Length: 424
Image (tube, rainbow, N blue to C red; front, side, top):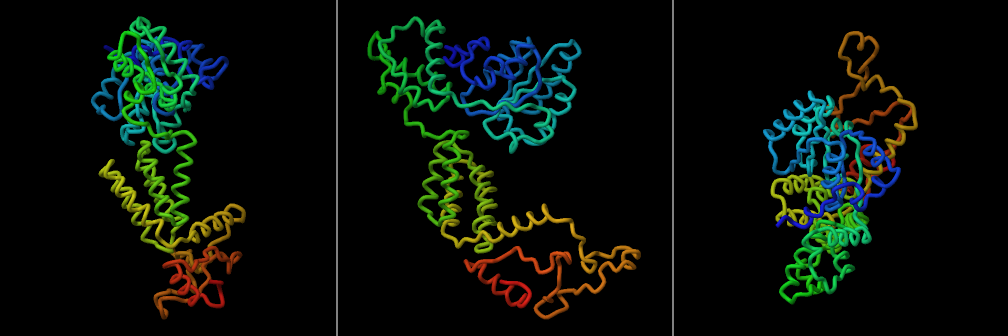
């Protein structure tokens, strides 16, 4: 039998539950669809929020040929065949919707291959993604699409979807239900309509073994779920709460808290590469020159996670998290660049001192480019006190190294070199 989630897929927009901010009366997307206008778009939202369903409904509304692929399993040959068909349709003034699920999985070259057909209007691309498009989709493709954000279904949405399925599905409407624990079922679906319907379908089969009247109670639902689903929505508040707690635990030098929040994220299905990227930033921002090897380790960890994937990537991330939490900390490098950027934005673009300019032509030499430049390697300790900033910023200091870890050594060295000139 066709899975329940597929059988009860809405046939029109009026049956589509949720996403009122996009499809409600007088909302932008609904108005455009009612007018039969269409354009390439990216549907960004969590699993089970209706991205595929909405794409199919759009194709039905404008009477377009609909082609669907998954970016995970489809190759170049299949993409070329669809684009070729779309070119033929275009000559006949017929729309072709090319729906790419998990479009964020396409590499740059694959995304590039879509640009011409979108620009010419030969295909209308609808890409579905659970990842932030601004990070995962190349700018030229993103600029040719509108991005619509789909939200996690509310509990009321899920109850409506469940009741609609029971009343409209031929098989479900023929069953004799004694009791359905809607609240427990909805709570354990975590806003995902597909999980809701799949769990309900399995629960029915399990309940059949108990008698003619079907009692879908907590025990049956738990058995269908097999295990408690971790309460973690990659796009909701908990996503940001956990990554924030993880970063702050490392910054606060608590390896136990760090590895706990790491486990919460991984068990919730978080992309290990997202965590690894954040750890690269943390290594530079919060550990910095107090333990400069942290940045090297973080970069290696990202590459390792990319190469091996889960579940082994969890070990790499755990090693990094516990090591980083145990290291001395400094944000001096971060503060330095922030202060420098503030000056660059608020002050004039002062000219580079002449002695620092490279005299690559005779005219430049005549204009004193490079004149009186002191070559540091010609002096003791390969150092000479010299002004390298524009004259208007002479003596300005941005970097103030701390006495934490290896940065203490840097501070002593700079203090010795620049005595009388800078305050290290």
